[in-house]
Amino acid sequence: MERQVEVVEPGAGWGPAPGLPHLPGQAPHQAFQQSLWAYAVGQFRLAAGIRVPLTDLAARLRLTVEQGWDDPDVVDAAMFRIRRVDFALSGRHGDTVGETWVWIWRTEPDVEAALDLLLDSLGLGPDAVYFRGDPEVGFTYFP
Image (cartoon, rainbow, N blue to C red; front, side):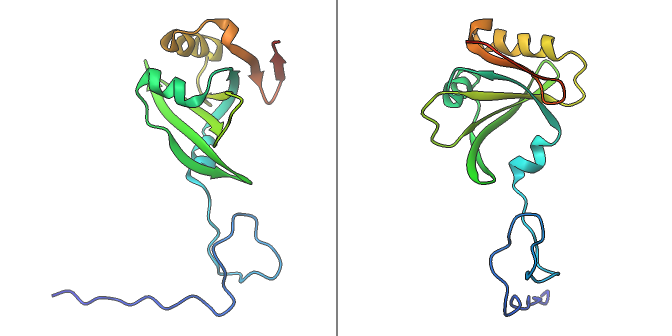
């Protein structure tokens, strides 16, 4: 029989693991938690916004919507691949406006073609897009 190792209780002044960054007064050896969404989305770039709720888009592609957090709110997201192009869709949890952000893998060479592929897979036309662009060069918004 293997011996069970016991973990020592947290230090006296430790609260729940905070998000980054380290703030004055926190124990220097305390863990800092990062959201799975925040970690994963770093591999993607924001490319567009679609005027359709995330739940509807996910249902069309038979995706499961997962929940994470992105300071200061809860975020709903689905990450998937179509024809070797990696996408993420995100929306604020409980969004009643019906807007979804489209993220495309950072190294994808043709973002416009990738976005067209996604729209085609969703059965949507370009009129569903309310912004397109890139955080580095700016976004174009459509009425």
